[in-house]
Length: 154
Image (cartoon, rainbow, N blue to C red; front, side):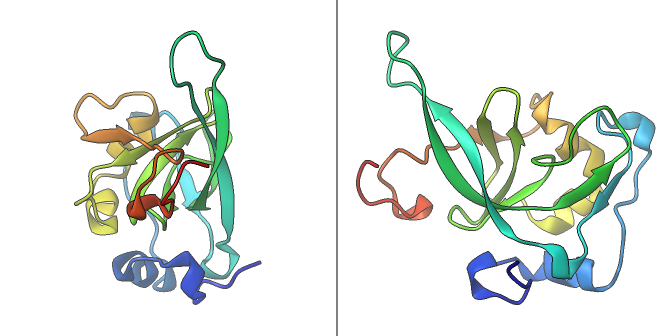
């Protein structure tokens, strides 16, 4: 396990403050696909990988790429597994979600902070199913980019 203070997690200050204060996300679980969620305790946060697929063209089978992220949700009351419901992606320095059924990682807008998510948690958790009112971007871990830690094709 990697402790929350580890530099490798590169957690934003507002998220660290929120978790250390013991606060919980405040929203009506009936408005959220995942129901009520409980976040991981600060000392239980770890860096893991999320599989994300990419196909160069419709004629090519998709390749899976491992994307490092810090899974934030420990439990939920809905009919979904918690992994990927809210994730901090340190290489991209952005929050997002992981669709485990389809192996896609979607990032929230670059300006999205934990404070934004905490003000409207159901909106961001529901983003996995409905991105209509949120800026989103599919992650491209296979593309050369300093933002995702790659300077050449994997």
